[in-house]
Image (cartoon, rainbow, N blue to C red; front, side, top):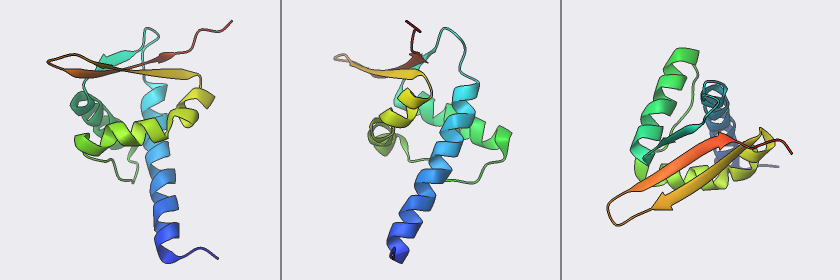
Length: 99
């Protein structure tokens, strides 16, 4: 039997994945690239357009959450790359080329 905390966490994962899936449906064929803060804004927009309920982590935790959802993204045909320079951290999401 799941504890209340475990059920709350599982519901949060499902809600976040539904927002992420709605955003992925709108990703252009060439992919998306930007900062974590820009990704947060894009996810908030997808959430508003789809009238989805759910929680999107703030930028400081969103990168960690996206890393946790790598398998979810890969199962939907997307690849995620994280880049870091001395001045910026960016994330790139693109469709995985079909072999």
